[in-house]
Image (cartoon, rainbow, N blue to C red; front, side, top):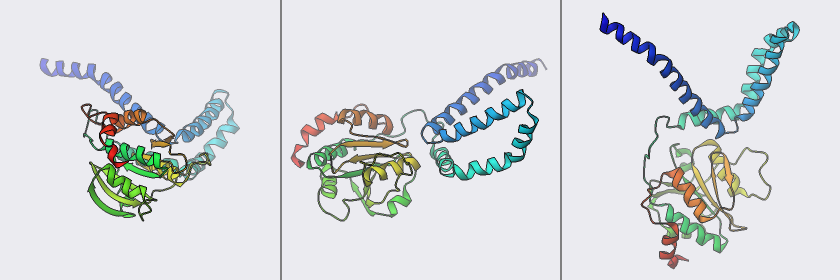
Length: 271
């Protein structure tokens, strides 16, 4: 019995620690999901309702408590209807999130070729839209375009986007070092405060990263600015070194890769 008692004592000690650690992990993951969507509107609305309820309880406002109790089911349904797009995005993020992955899952060696093509097309004032697939499956998006399944190269991307081909106006999907499909149509963003100067490419890039964890690279046809969209945000007119660093972090590129500047110097022949 002494061994059993010792085990029980150990469990009694470890139980509150495990409880705190698990709750901390869940709260941290929930925070990551929320900040990557526009779900803060839901949080703010819930805080307002909770504040009024707490106020009514503290000051014993029976009429207000009675009203809140009666309309609570209606409020829950109202929240579900009003914030349905945001709730959908939250659940999509939960479904696509790899919760227990902390290290590098894969190594990507094809980003340099995309950035070379992006700089080339930027100088030519040609638009470009490339989607880097991560964990969310993009089968529905791929089905809207033409499947290619070709090894990625700067020359191929410049050919697709730099000439008046049937595929140049839509997006290329890049996955595991290959161009899976081209001419793919992306969902447009539902955000209402997007700058009016942004064209369809930028709205489509933002729309996809609102619904998935993909990273989208955009080259503006008007200004030549190179931008990245990810985590429901559009980062406009970035420098190549900034894009390289962001993609290195998001796509977990191997640290022993050549720098983008070295690769550009070696590949000027496609310009």
